[in-house]
Amino acid sequence: MKTILSPKLPRITRARKKLEKILNVKITNRGKEVTINGKPKDEYTAEKVIDALNFGFPFSDTMEIKEHDFILEIINIKEHTTKKDMGRIKARIIGTKGKTLKTLCNLTNCHFEIKNNFVGIIGPPEFIENAQEAIISIIKGSKQGNVYATLERNQIKDPVDLGLK
Image (cartoon, rainbow, N blue to C red):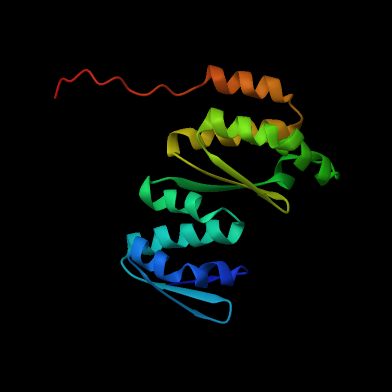
């Protein structure tokens, strides 16, 4: 049994039946506390899904944590910069009309969300590290073009199936 403090409780209560069915857990709430009952593995997955919902990710992106064994990572912007102008740093991450985030999504196969001074990433385990490095590089002041080039160079190739089973 796990208990999570949920600031965005209505998002969870609206989707409670769907979440219970997909995640194989029983979800109850008392005030802003959300309690999860189930098998330990299912509880862990449900906790990550609820954390992603609380962070602000859309429901479809959070369900990929369960369906495709994706990982949720949260980066604190303040840990990687000494600059005080957070608005400017967040603007660099988002880019003009969201172009930087969209390009990062395409290059890393991950979903990004920005909330306060945090950047949330949901993606496959093999791509999460590249996505984190890209976000940290942009926070530290690297040009977006250089970050894209690095991501393209370090692109993970799908393993070739030789049919030798």
